[in-house]
Amino acid sequence: MSRFDTNESDTAAPGRRHGVPDRDDRAALSISADATNRPRRSSGGEHVVWFDYAKGICIILVVMMHSTLGVGEAFAAKGLAPEGFVHWIVAYAKPFRMPDFFMLSGLFLAHAIGRDWLHYVDKKVVHFAYFYVLWTLIQAIIKTAATTGLDAAGLTSTFVGALVTPYPTLWFIYVLPLFFVATKLLRPVPAWAMLAGAALLHTLPVQTGWSAIDHYAAHYYVFFLGGYLLAPYIFAATQSAANNSAKAFGLIAVWAVLNGVLAFTPSPISGWATVAELPVISIVLGSMGAMAIALLAVQLAKFNVARFVQYCGAHSIVLYISFAIPMAMTRVVLLKLGLITDTGWASIVVWLVALIVPLTVHIVLRRTPLRWLYERPAWAMLPHTYTVNSG
Image 1 (cartoon, helix red, strand yellow):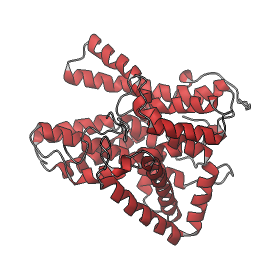
Image 2 (cartoon, rainbow, N blue to C red; image 1 turned 60 degrees about the vertical axis):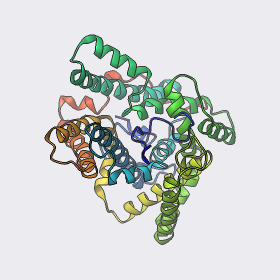
Image 3 (cartoon, rainbow, N blue to C red; image 1 turned 30 degrees about the vertical axis):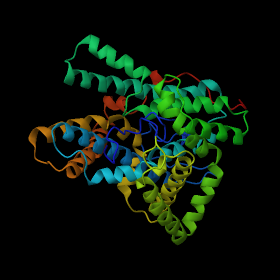
């Protein structure tokens, strides 16, 4: 068996044995439908510039993972090397890639959770449902046309199936509304009990029969809750990092070494591939990684470098919902032309195209009638008024 799980897409929970928002909605979500680079704000009202940097790091790693593993599988089917040097980066990022995304998603939830239910559902459920349904349909049309021909039966089967079983490249925005609704319903529960329950879900082999829960929600809810419930401590840590860069870089270096050691050390217990995936360790290491990325993002923002990373974070919804199309097309072209036979360099090419093309298309379309591909139109919004309550 390969040292890299070539079926990994952050879809099967690691560590298991089996295998456009309005101005009052700023930063409540890790992925925003707002196409503008609007500054995020913390509970204290100050701009949180590092937030987009952190999102940018996450979405870049997510696109890299899908691109690399897809290339590995496609090349293996053609008798070429199934692994390249980028697989090592993907494996290194596995312990913290999605935990960080979910921590960021919960970080500003306190701004929104007190809203009335209609307003809350519009912003936290309908908002994501619009993009999931739209881009699932687009991808289903392309996939069906490329495999069996564009027949109504095949398209309907693929599309309806994706409404129950999340698309591998869109599952994040499928699961996130479940987290928002569950957290609002659980508000009366003490914070410690919520975190303890979420930690148990992460550790235990949940088998409800619904993959959205079994493979995704159960594994990552603890990180989302951590972002929401521990937000004041996270902001305090990032503020400290902004004031003391040397200390921040020291902590990042320590984490980077520890993450690498645990991510590449085989597990002594059957059922888990690496030590990083073991129960408890996966929560601790995922949380440490999420904080390390936040501290790194603070430094990037402080020194105003890597602006492309910030741009990717500010437009993360654009990348997330549409990167799969140019990614798949580039992979097919590379295989047909045979110009690049090295798996690592082919992964780099596919990854870069999957990043650049969606952002370019968005720039071209954002002031045209086709902007509804990236911005939720008024007809897809629930009528509501802004009210805040304790429920």
